[in-house]
Length: 342
Image: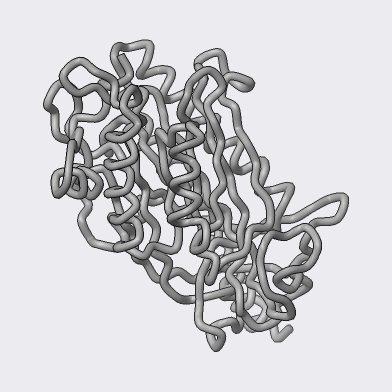
């Protein structure tokens, strides 16, 4: 019954790669986020990170960074749910590995800074494949669903980031409509940046990275999740409740872990269109559709063909606007002080 939300169903060769592209959405966007320096790691009453990327010369004024981040969200279609001719792909490890080798080829070809993956199958053979093929290039963080064989993962490019911390959100602990859905939050910093505030050098205690002596930007929060498929009205309500948990618990963790004004990137399979109540909730919570901002394509994009042969957009990359709002507020405060002659 879980095969429902994956109509692409690539089987071999070129079709596998095409399916991978259909189930993904890449983002390239210039970002500039406001920041107030704070201690990192946080002291008793912590502060919050800032999702950004920039060239060294851009770390000036109230911008932590102005550069380019390339992010992709990708539902892999877990082999334990994928059926072909009535047979689950997971029963034939050869077919499973063959399809995922094609997916990994696409990931390498796209050369994204961050990958947010859903329906990542927690099978030792498959996890070993991803580690062997991508582990030297990316930090790989995973979280399995509470009662299922699959889960989510976040991959961050080692040459661009180092991982500060990660946090697990189990939706059913916060809502009776959470089912066994989860969200993974990863805090990371851009490496090889000039010293900024009191943030630690790469390789210092409490942070995962290689090398020593280089400085890092304030942190960025990356979040991925996979919401319930809307079979009926109750599922629609469950999706909305899950979205609220996703936003509130991500914010709660970031607020107590990082400097104020930290932007948050939430990417994943929301199993709904841009016009539905879940996307409205995301926008009302202060998130913007980063793909629309980066490409200028405002209407729904097709990212998925479901089991009913409906083609629609269900995969999103959302970026919080807190940094942008804080930057504007700081600018207005500076203007007011200037007018008062302070």
